[in-house]
Image 1 (cartoon, rainbow, N blue to C red):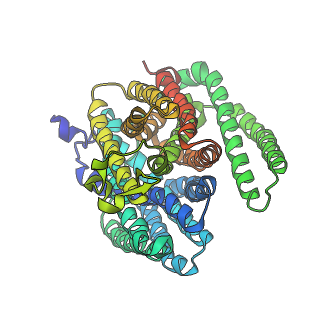
Image 2 (image 1 turned 135 degrees about the vertical axis):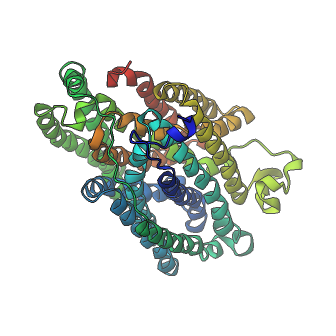
Image 3 (image 1 turned 120 degrees about the vertical axis):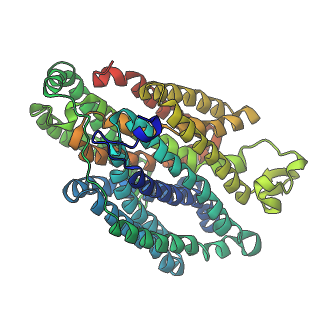
Length: 507
């Protein structure tokens, strides 16, 4: 059988290439929306005179939507099937995008944040459905390859989003300031809203096969895993998940409390109290799950529960790096040579600005450089998909994670253009992490993959936390020092990759 066609053929000989291609439009869509949101952070800081930490509310609202909708999306998709889950997601995304029209008239920060949160709720449905769906649209041997290939189209959306953001969020600033740019903010979102409505009509008319995941281990293998490796290791992984979730819930609680409470001691008390309460309540449920732990539970598989932790820290690192890329290139870059004045790569004359006699990258130039970085991200996706055909996915994940630990360290040390190069290279080596963690996490779960995927998507909430922490460090020190936080996150990702074969019982 031809290798290219076998990637999309199931065991019954049917090709699902058309369905796969259609699903790839969803990957492009959510990346486009996400990357526009990343390019808005700097805009709101200029418009509302916010600190770096306050501008991170955009990221917080975005990932809060994932946290709130992930489990409902997984449950509904399990009940309704792939097609209805996709339609629900598309309609919610469209509603969130169209909300930016009245939000522009309201012209307050909360109105824009509400739109961001609604859009992310819709994207949660799409990610919960599309990621596991790609793994069943062909031979199980190429599940990780397919999801990385689909995520390559996701990467194209990451490139286009900042370009659109630069045009509508920053181009007008040269003429009428940030306020003028905010008046055109609704235009790209309204366009996306209309496009998504048309796309939902296409999905309504197309018949999508309801395929099940066929890579479940046989009963004897499940039993062995559950009673030897899984019973002890799964409980430890459950406890780690509890600690991560408790920290996340406490961070969300103190973040909302900080809206009205400025006293640091009070906020620390709220944070500590929430962690203690979360752990006490969580232990009750963990013990209950542990008493009934069997092959019927997705928590019986340590490679799954490990994936939720790894995804939490990966998305945390990704969100922080993406969100503060523009802050870094506009504030931390060494002085530009005069030859870069008006360079096409930086967006022409508006791409650079002279401050105190030093040539620097402007906000518009930063948005264009973000597209360049996302170009490396896409290149990493396509080369990663090819690499995963030859090298086990967990080894690629562990190696790429370790490389990014080193790159984050170079950024933190702030050693001139070496640190700048490290920042751009980090996008390349982040590229395969999200889809690979996803594929490794649902490996062998069969029909339970639909529910498992909702927990992995829920782990995206890590992205709501790190940007706030990086913003605080950036305000108190500098943006370079802030990258020590994603460095720690990538250590966790690397450890999961190298430990996966032991966690899954696969050799």
